[in-house]
Amino acid sequence: MTTQDRGSAFKNICDETTRNLLTAVKEGRQNQARIYLATLSGLIMGASTTGGISQAQAYQQMEMINSMRLEIDRAFEPQPKQVT
Figure 1: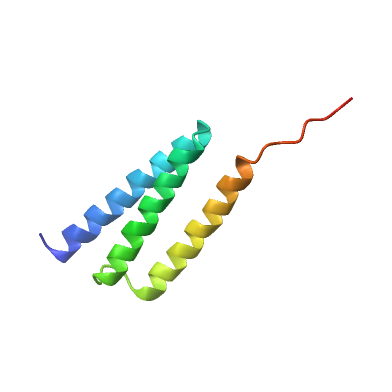
Figure 2: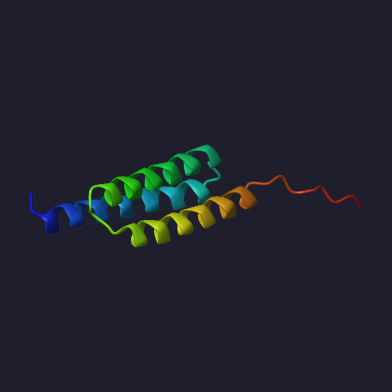
């Protein structure tokens, strides 16, 4: 497998994981969404340690994942009940 093939495979896996993450969020599956975020984190860290992506790219991607994690947590926070 060439470096380009590995890069394409990595991108495909990340894309599929991201699609699954978005589906989990839409369907209200918070735990599943967190698992997909952890999977993306692991993929990115693995790629950065094996030279698949640069440390700078990994840092940027991890910042994005952390932002996504915060947004997911906010989306699943219990909403206060309004008393009328």
